[in-house]
Length: 549
Ligand code: OOB
Image 1: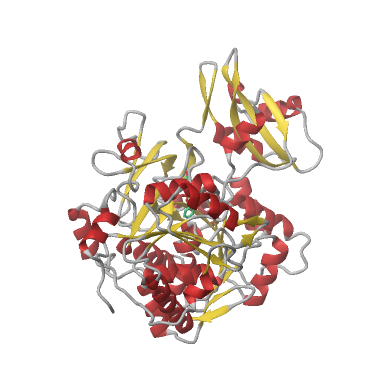
Image 2: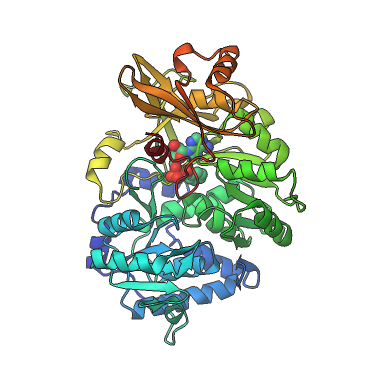
């Protein structure tokens, strides 16, 4: 192993990074959660233990762990010769494919810090990531999903001169071919990180308001995230994981995802086409046992089980998360798609909650799981920041062995998003059950700010959506605020109907029968063919409002 960082490189990476406080870091080491190993050691260890097992597979390629390990070192050699070195940030935006993993580990082995972009991000997001992170390079596909990433790269490099290199997987156009870096002649490189408490990679936040923020995850915290999640999900080498969501997202990357699967010697299959037809065929072909889905996709898969000729019968554990799922939706998925449903409430910022294999059905349907680690500290507070009584609703504040202590280079956000004692304010409204089988499990009841101020009343969008989702004629629904000269805001329900649309009057009769509060009913009902989605597939309310106004 060659030497790690120079002092200057470590200083530049550390600028604007908020580390774990020393006392808590010591505690996590003592508990054995932090092992002081670099993130790519997950691959090093897998290649040593199971060299010949399949590691990653896509429609065109496959690598064993030993092959991926060697490919990562070769790619690191190419990146190093290009001048990409320890601590350098590199925007990584590749579709779900083996090359995503080769590039990720190549960057880590070169000591560089990948910024995990999603394929749905465009110049606005990537420009922002380049600006904040000071990235020196961008790795993209030539084309994917009908979009030419080289055109976007040309715009980006013109606007962000710090982006010195663009590497293209496929036909490079005016840029450098990723294959020439990956397979170029020259010695392989395998660098260790100078400090496992420094960032290994940067994730992007999942919010739908404003531009995503950067989240630095350290080697120590992210190795723990992936390996502990794999253990809690009881993943073994007999499992096989399907990446159906964008691979750069925390969920399919490390919860347990690609990295967790690797840590137990299980293969990961990548697909860029999560349609039931394609995904079910892959699940059948590779005997996939585990995957992670957002709610909308899980519902599509569940529905498709009615007509698809090949059913995903090898699945033993299907994680669904990313946004709130009503008990009715959970039951729909449980009954139609898989008895192995697991709800997961996670965030790129760190903390994970999920239901475990073998949890009772009531827990799986009615909760979003329990914390991954006993060292995840949770507080539930009211508007004034005071702890609510046990079992009551409030905002979730968290800190722990894999939760960030500050966004990367964003003092303004950090002043708002963290309590003085270092808890991250999630913005999520939750209750933690105190008794029975659900004790210790969390229910996410909404976002603190996802409310509609109608007249003098504050209406929870989630509560109304939950009511709407119980209607048999409604496939999906989102409640949003629209401006109103008299009420300030009025309630608009945007609904995807299963068949014939129902009228507002019919809907209100239904809500009456369910006992929904009078002031919390839609003023406007709009039928839509589909709801707009974020890059990972959550309902994008900002875009929805823009469309409706
Ligand atoms: C996952 O991560 P992000 O960073 O895209 O989004 C995090 C936010 C959470 O703060 C919460 O508001 C929401 O997404 N969320 C849920 C949820 N899971 C996430 N809200 C209600 N119920 C759930 N089950 O979305 C993410 C990261 C890792 C694993 C799974 C999801």
